[in-house]
Amino acid sequence: MDNIAGTKSSLTWAVHISVAALVLLWIFPTLGLLVSSFRTTDQIRTSGWWAAMFPAVQNETLRAADPDEFRVDLGEGRFMVEGNLFVVDGQVESAEDVPAEISVWGTSSRDIDAYVPGETADLGDGETMTVQSNGDYVWEGNDDQLSGRGQRVFVTAESPPEFTFANYRNVLFDPGNREGMAKAFFNTLTVTIPATIIPILIAAFAAYALAWMEFPGRALLVAAVVALLVVPLQLALIPLLTLHNAVGIGKGYLGVWLAHTGFGLPLAIYLLRNYMVGLPREVIENARVDGATEFQIFTRIILPLSFPALASFAIFQFLWTWNDLLVAMVFLIDASGETTVMTRQIVELMGTRGGDWEILATSAFVSIAVPLVVFFTMQRYLVRGLLAGSVK
Image (cartoon, rainbow, N blue to C red; front, side, top):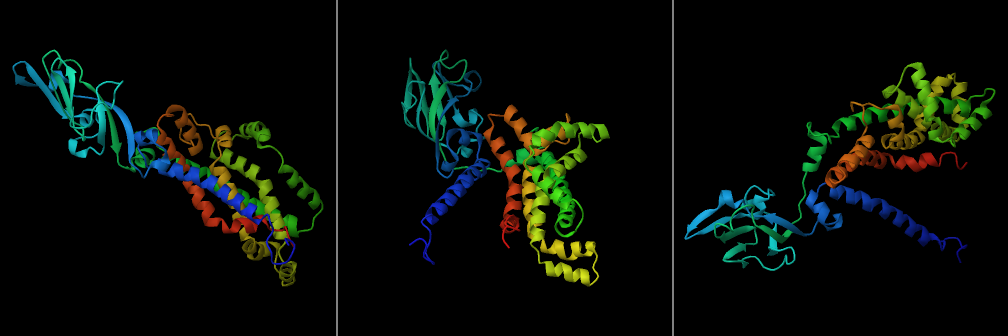
């Protein structure tokens, strides 16, 4: 029955499930990165991104205020210290700003849930402590008991969901923060835009010549372009860098532009030639009969008709250049950090700030935001360009 016209193959469901699985595998990490970029350090460490919309329960160790400085004399050898545990610990500025609610608390690490809010703990020899759900406490005792460091309190607190733009302000706009990605963002744009446009311009002319112009050795050139597609990029890094140093362009924007152009040209020429070969021959021959030059045919007929293929390659080249680390490290090394791109900046953050997950998540999402916009804006041309020339 599978071969009857109008019926679906038995593999249809397998294909649909595979596509759905691939989409989900791509969406979940991206969504997790986005959610984590708006969360605080404590939230990221205590719960996964999928729990961001639910209250977070975490165990914390807080301390009362320094009794030598804040104790109050009650008379008869009794003293008292009162305040708010979260204010003393520096999490909030005042008791009114406390977002968390304590469910249980204790004064020993072996029994952190010994008391509920409002209960008074007997610490021995008349020393007592009472903790409320918002962190307010009253600590009483004699002169010897209320001295030295503040009493340690173990609390289990429930915090409501919290999202903040502070991570993005810290990453993008804080000039005194070495994690600032704004300069790296513009450096990446400086590398990516020319490295995308230059190979497209060169490849378009070359593809037209290989597709519609008759000259000796054209077949050999096409074969050479196909052969270059399988040459590993790493094989050409050192010879190309040596050539750059020999001609005097060294390590800088010009060198990295030319490197990306050279590495991207084989795919660009191959893709555009296959598309241009499939264009209607009658249109080009009629233009030649009417007296149009090759340049006029290329600019007024070929380029407008080849826009899907041009956009398809532009997507590939932009994404590859934007996410590149290897070529940037070889051809764009700057000890002062003036030309550091985002991929290298994120690698440095992973080495120096590996524990600050909110900084890493925000920096990573900033890095992928532009490629996502480019891809979804031009994705309708992707398949059309890739399938160019595959059928007649």
